[in-house]
Length: 198
Image (cartoon, rainbow, N blue to C red; front, side, top):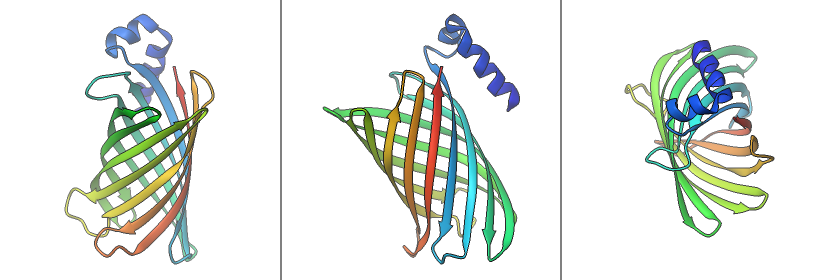
């Protein structure tokens, strides 16, 4: 992973090499901080996700990212840690005027105290641009890919985002998670995401 990030940073500083090796893509690196609170109010978690990637202006795929996440949860005074990694792809679509959308998908692996499992998600979303702010609303369907139980959830996600310059972006999001099978409320989360585009 360190080699991947170092290579991405090196490519970012050499525009000609990046143009050739990344097929015209623009390297970026982002970091996300999340605070999640369980529905019953006894448990909460904090996570940090690093996501280096490449962004393209057009094509079948407009963004590819590698996600690395670490999380600390506290439930009834007991602390635990979890780690996850995944590959995420996104396709942006312009709809009309100031409205656009995207379809994002991920395949990943998560390790936590009660076991390990493979998971994935698909997320269609709409983005409404009201300069200098973009309002985002998405619906994410998270599923275990290995048949393990208790990991299938549906999430409603929304919030504003700002691009402060050609390089810097900041997004704020609220997420409500519900169990896919029963529809019961699982958790709420607040997320802050910063990205730097080279």
